[in-house]
Length: 161
Image (cartoon, rainbow, N blue to C red; front, side):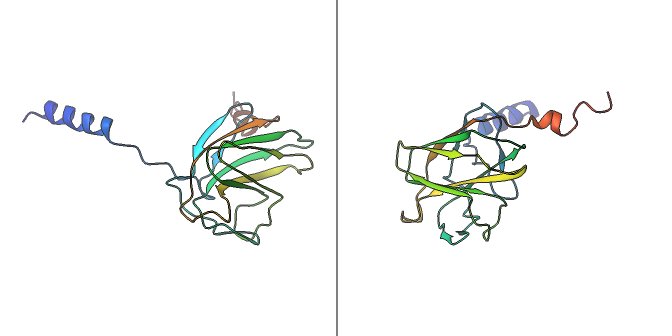
């Protein structure tokens, strides 16, 4: 078998192999941007936060992050296709007490208000409802209705020009 034919077979196999879900954890959260709807799933994710403050969370977690500037207002809108819960956290660890929490049912919507946050980094954890079976997971859409800092300019992308 020629090298070209073997290479073509490997590429074909990779093209039809399902891609694993990229883990969204406290160590590698998804960054949220202004005005862009984010589609995600908790299925295939780890249960990286079995406790969120005093709230038991035995389900797969999806962790996203954003940075708040002074005077941030508005909200994130969460739409889910499963029995979901969310927590807005000031830090991403199991002992952090949530600033906001909520639950939705399949096809439900929930607004996560952002008023009163001090400048800094925050985390949104999307998971199953506490009373749902441990294997509960599903898809969601998270959309920002607020002004978030542009990470390219915030990190000095254009410095040195």
